[in-house]
Length: 267
Length: 276
Image (cartoon, rainbow over all chains, first blue to last red; front, side, top):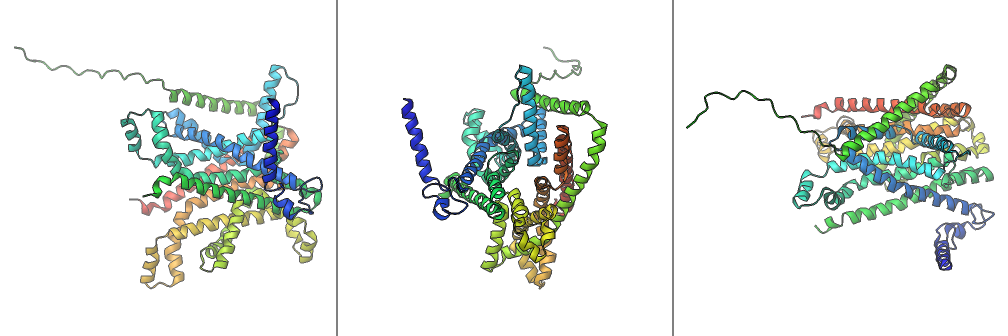
């Protein structure tokens, strides 16, 4: 049975290797930069940079659900009737929208390290604790994203008339079902442009995580630039890769927007 | 047969029913408790680790770092505003070459991280030191502060050009036609009719852009400029005291909140003629 799974994993990774857009057999680095510094393999930096591209993309994609879910609940808390809930949600957004992302990252990274270290010492573990840079980046960027996301969702909530909720209740739907079936589909439509902007900001903020040692696009190109002394070329490649990510996500977002507005198109 | 002969004396209202203890109230109290615990914890940490010697040693550094941050942001926002004018007009012009160049500029600077742009200018252009020396520009690009100023100016110019373009295009067509009907020259119409209305629309995005620049300016610490963040990193690397970051957080928060409130006041003041 385990051999079967290994075979599947191998087949999938081989398939991904073939369609790999940067370093595969038909990847751009292999086609156009075979004998330059960007070659894939031991004597070029192509594979390292391709790995960094993957790390940047996966960090942004992993942060998105965290930030969206947290932002949704914070937006709910901000329009709650409970004063204490509103106050604590407002403190949260004021804090994380006011602090520089880099400082948030440092505070989370070193703060988590101190907290976890103290906790482990209290349990009886005597050793150095290192927080994973990917994890710390995910938490810090997720918090910043959720603070901005709650504002976008809050203004989207305000755009939905009260009658929509009342219609849901009149149909005998529970509060949760009203939210799920009636409010959320409209909310997505209103909030999508704002969320698209936040996604772009998130994508750009991932570059900051390279400062605490995550091997993302910027980190990998920096190492290459330092070793080869061809700084301008490598940083220009980093810029181009970020532009490609931005372009791809704008394509995805316009298709999602088309999907969200599919019911309006016929009218 | 009976009838009332006396009035019933006024009664006290019934007692209000007790507030139900809902889930929202529970979570509200819990989160508020978390914030309170954090505030007390941070206060205890600062009070417990209070060291007048460190304060006297690093306090002035923090103030000078704050000055560097404010100067960098003020200069780059002002220079960026100047640069954004021709960019916005190029973006709106009917000449396709001009508008495409401006579009490419804006797309590049808004699509890539500020940190990457800073590295491209500081380290990337720094690798052409021989050529730069030949052109007599090396003194400028040798200094990290100049590179940061250049990058930030170019970056904020792209954002401000988009703000300005959006604001100018948001002025209704009738305003242009009205100015034409009054026989105003194009220049007068622009400066006296279109721009004042556009700037009111642009006020809020401009405030957001300045706040973004203050927050974004923290990254110059990575290329060895000693702004507020740079001084903080220096203090942390020497003392390994976590407080260093907390003081910086407090200062950044104060700056952003002050600016936000100033901008809210400015907006209500400048739009009071639109209130009905």
